[in-house]
Image (tube, rainbow, N blue to C red; front, top):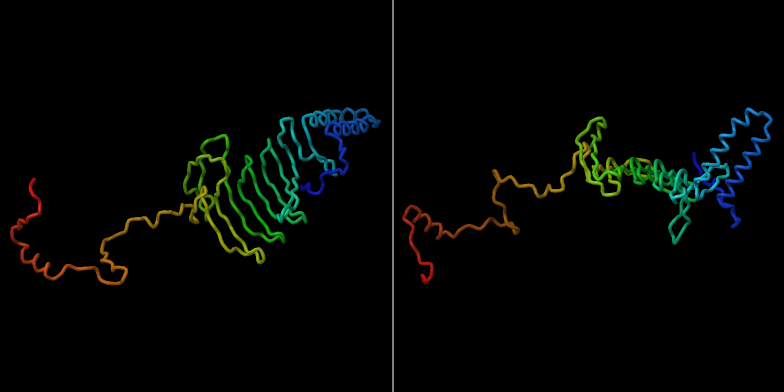
Length: 275
């Protein structure tokens, strides 16, 4: 269900305050009850009247849609609750938008949709604990799909969380379990897919495990491949940067070492004074 363009925005600055609106709705419902001839029906509708009165009494502010829906609710603790529709106007070259979704204790929850001011859907995001969680999809202003993102929200009540990493090719297979420290924000987790918005074909994919690049099987991509030790077995001496062969000893020194290789080591002076 969409509430866009259905909020009651009266042009009169003397808009009734929530208490007056509550009183008006209660009076209307009361009139409907007392105008009924069927006594049994009156008693059936009486609880509805009491429930309506108590629910509105718990709200500090709200708006009414043209269909009578109660939107943009603010409770007595100044927390956003229930269905909301937000509108941002064009500003300094930035295009405006409208978005709709649910709040739970001032935090976004569930699916939120964003539309251009012309009515084109440009984003669809999923939230948990006020953070991105699951799939998010983004579109051009012409409606073409741009990309799909995958996020993981961590329960803010827990300093750490254990996350199962699944094989991308076999979602039923758990590759590993990772303990994650709660940094207070969502992390990239899963496959990100990028599309050509005009033709709708996939042009690139990226895989993440808890904000780190991953292979398609869910294993992490090592960032230290260039630092791995080199296997020197069977390796040959490399040439220098000029392409020349490695330097060798002069022939005279080689002849001297060969000539004295089997003899007793000759004692030589080191130039020290012995002090």
